Image (cartoon, rainbow, N blue to C red; front, side):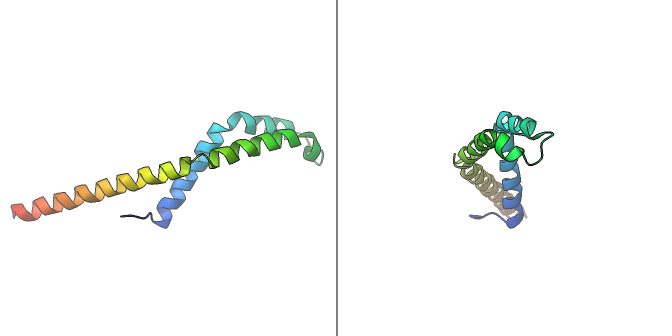
Length: 95
């Protein structure tokens, strides 16, 4: 139980992205508000806001939060496996 399945990794990444968007919501909203109603001019008109949004998302990604989430999930997975193992051992002994 030292690794995550591909499905667990995908769920973890989805949750991480959700947390990152929530953390950076003010910057994302500011960029989205700037971009609303624009076409090509969004490139230069909203560039500072885009950089701010990207910097926020990048700093959240580099914060170690994903690794903390992964370690917590592995800890929970090991605890469930240990509990299941103890339950099956106790069940076998009682027979």
